[in-house]
Image (cartoon, rainbow, N blue to C red; front, side, top):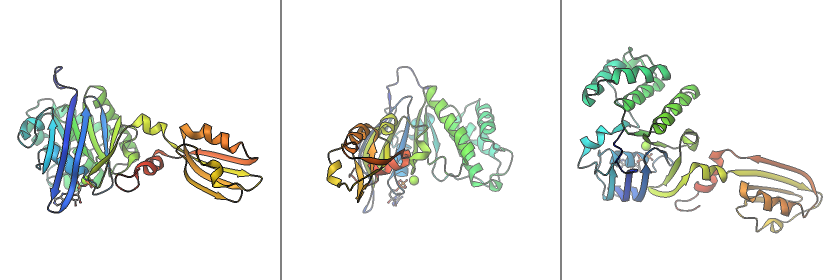
Length: 307
Ligand SMILES: Nc1ncnc2c1ncn2[C@@H]1O[C@H](COP(=O)(O)OP(=O)(O)O)[C@@H](O)[C@H]1O
Ligand SMILES: [Mg+2]
């Protein structure tokens, strides 16, 4: 998997911009993906995720700025880039009358890699796919499994996966996530896109958040977990005012109705919040951790560039 002297930065972009006519698909994106990490490329539909990955594969040319994969320009050296990349397109195309195995053989011939049947059989078994059926008879989930198998052929250093888990049921999703983690643990790099945090939160080391073509955040998953919001509801024996709780850092969605306070607080603010609550006489207190998706939307779900 790559040479020891290869630099730690596997993908980097500087001022990466792509316009289609008057549509700005990607605007001034600076990004670094490092060797050995799983990087989640997140954003709502139309944010520019697929465009980024297609630029990375050299299928399109940047309007401005630059993208490098292992130091190479994919537009100028697509073959060299493709040798090191396993690609799973957002909309994989197959020959419906051919079996999965025929697809594997074709891809293996293109890659000139002798071990491919072994890789394919191992991955196929883990995901639970029948390689001997014509692809036209496969369900959407099974076609997606075949796309995963094809991306892994030949042991590429970098996996570039565009919304790979759409169509997987939870068990297959788990097995897929294990494959991704194993790839990174063996020194490989994974860049995978999704429009939902839940799909990448168990695998990603870092995430980049794209909105309307702009990179609005790059975050370690562990940091995002540390900022996870807690929903708090407190009842008091007398009316309170919102102003009583102002100044608690990071407090959100504060609602005060008579003698009840509802709000959301990041874990780090709970101590300060409890200090304020204790200035009044509490009759009831509830505190539940929100799921990561809710935390994510609270921080990154606003207007582009807004937090
Ligand atoms: N080939 C194309 N021609 C014109 N517009 C495009 C093309 N590809 C993407 N776009 C536009 O660029 C924007 C980003 O699209 P895309 O990268 O597919 O987003 P995502 O993958 O995050 O859903 C969208 O507004 C989309 O309509
Ligand atoms: Mg897309």
